[in-house]
Amino acid sequence: MDATLDQVLEDVNAEPTQIASLSTLILALKQQVADALAGITLPQAVQLKVNAIFDQTEKNKQLFIDAINATTEPAPEPAPEPAATTRSSILKKR
Image (tube, rainbow, N blue to C red; front, side, top):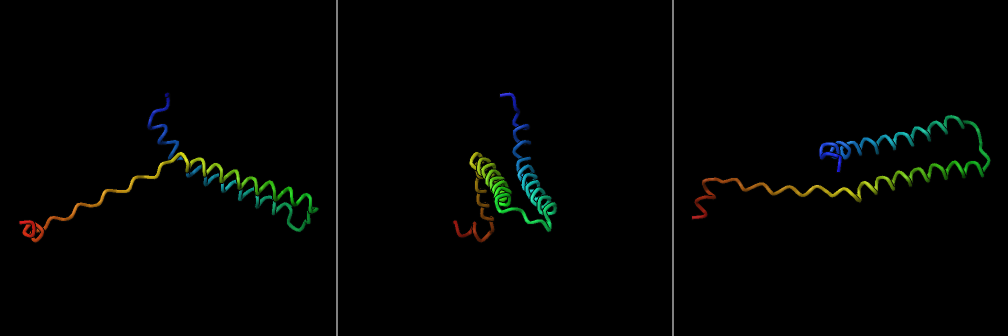
């Protein structure tokens, strides 16, 4: 295994940025298509293909996110804080 733990940690920390970038790209592409087609009515068959492209892009993005989540273990729950020691708690134990 050539990757160091630091490299793996760097990659894992970059994943949320990559996912956000992917979402931004998809939204930007949708907006560019909408702007380019403003005032133009596409034939129904073409519109269905455009919709299918963006629907599949969203599904692919979700598959990517699901794959990351499937391989990422949730952080362990933090240990409870120890109870504060006070004079009255010490006296109660006696």
